[in-house]
Amino acid sequence: MFSAVTRLATGAGLLCGPVRFDPVEAVPVEPVFAESLHQHTVRLGPRPTGSAGLIDVLGSRGEGGRGGAWFPVATKWRSMLAQPPGGVVVGNGAEGEPASAKDAAVLQSRPHLVLDGIEIAAEAVGATEKVIWLHQGDDRTELAVREAIAQRGQHGSRSPIRVEVGPAGYLTGESSAVIRALSGGPALPAFRSVPATVSGVGGRPTLLHNVETLARIALLARYGLVADTRLLTITGDGARTAIEIDPAATVSDAVAAGGVDPNTVQAVLLGGYGGQWLSWSDAADLPLSALGKSLGAGILIPLARDRCGLRLTAELDHYLAAASARQCGPCMFGLPALADLFRQVADGRGGRRRLRRVRELLDEVTGRGACHLPEAAVNITTTALACFAADLDSHVNRGRCRHG
Image 1 (cartoon, rainbow, N blue to C red):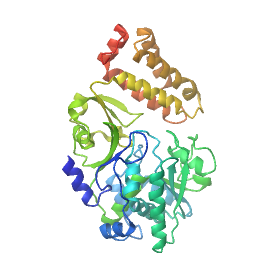
Image 2: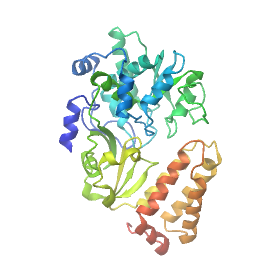
Image 3: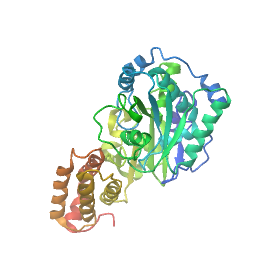
Image 4: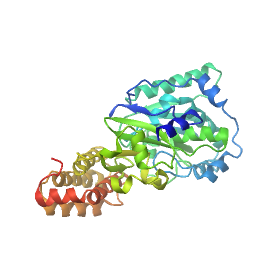
């Protein structure tokens, strides 16, 4: 599938090719050169003005947001158009998910595609303010975005785009947390009953899109139809690799394109830290198009054959518990208790009694909480129990791990 990745990137794609990042920091392993405004314009032509028919194109394609929720873009736009003009458009580029790097790859390599998208969206819904939201510590991405905005100003752009940088964290890129922070509050999920398109930043109608969504909007506005590619982050082999790939490709194809040998994989985590485990025998030949929302924000984490999936899941449970906003009972008490109990199971301590309590806690936490964090822990833990059943038997009944 490397040829497919390259072929897509040389046309009207979102990436110039695979981009490998450090496992933790948003720092490319190899230099990434941001496309200048001149290069961007030569490749794609000038940004189209006006939005006649674009909302219908978005609707007919069933275009969904690429931040993980896959909410229909056209539905958001129609909701904004029903409000008075003068609202806000926010491009969310804060990747709180540690396993993701696709948004950083787009912003660092093709920032003008995202900036075109936010301007097109603002024109379409009558918004007067445009904001790119990033998180602290992602210095290379922030630099690429600020330089791109400066280039547009030098070429006569009179449509200012503001950059806001919030605290780094798993939840600080969640949509209600972004809106709450931009309104002057903490960057934590909010208990919202009114859609942001009705009352968002400072009480104004707000359209919030992931930056990949905005990049796709910029291409759709030019061509009407573009290749329905998938941007994925393959987290493994000591790096996070962002790729653009045909949705007809299989999970095995994607993992290989991300630099991981499929023959070394025993299972894969779909959708990142709040996703679901599948055994490699069940997942390898599945086309990406069949996975739908299971990919979340576009993340695949292959697990090597010599690693223990239960222990990795225990680590992720503890990460999610520590990332909690601590605004409600399930996050304050349920997630830490679940993480501690599951770690004991993963370490071969406690046997069946603690495993039974883990299952009880999963039932107690399911469907509760102000945000989706408890559900994320439930998903990854529940699917781990099924995916690693043989390992679980060894841990619970023999007190030892099959992987050493």
